[in-house]
Length: 376
Image (cartoon, rainbow, N blue to C red; front, side, top):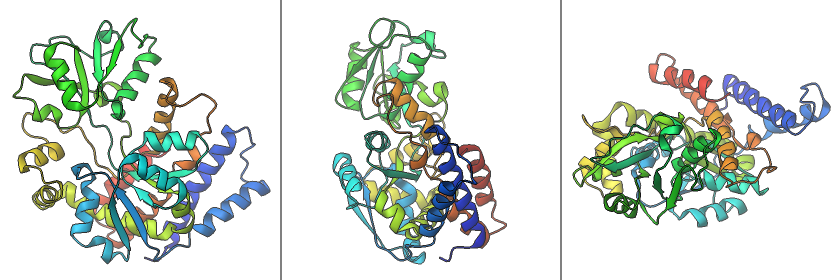
């Protein structure tokens, strides 16, 4: 892929804006006219023109169908068509982020808390795109009748949660920011080992309700469990798994990351517009029953799939999530600002390229409009 003038200028403007935002937060003047800002912008522009044709090593976790756009892009040959030399590896989160921190892994399509924690501790890595937005369901027994619509509605309840579930942090921060004590006085949160343990604890009355990942409500709907809400409906859109890049990949393989993103966006288009092509690919990849895959990805007549697989970086939501992590003490106050490490540049350049290829394609126009809302 050649870097068009529109793509180059658009990405450079986003990067420059991010740089100035970071400077303002750290107490600098943020003036575009200063020598320091000019040098930083020149450096950003320089590495954004390099790194074409570099091999990328990309991590995935297990056989989860939440990475559908990437799997579809691989199965349909889009990475090869875009000249992207990518090797996919199955890795666990801890291993993946340790490798990202040293540059031994270029990309990881899962995780967001881990990225934020590394950044907070001074290890640079970059969030360059989305894998999942939202995704956390609130499950209760079928006879649960309480309405959960505002923070006060949660008073007195014992809520089960799984620590790796991103939505639990968002809900806890939402309640805490509303003035509720989430350590037992107003609301009790009980951690359990996994989602099935949460479902069983709910059925036994050991917790009043629980928070689980997308599709657990579907799987357990004939077992005395129902979905009584979602974190998204209460707190708005929030980031779950992201596309995370090592500093080395971001600074030395930028154009290869753009090629990767173009292919992934093409896979996302198939996922959104052609379920009959997407579902068999994801059934084969995940080795899960077709009805489960289809329900988890697209929902059914009576079940909502809350998980949103948009590749959009959703920079604004990620920055807000970093503050949520501070609210629940997953990140200490005084940690480095996250703004300069949440980059919309790669995605913007990839989307611009596809819009120039297919200027009349409404799908790209819709993503362009969403980008403007999601990436302040």
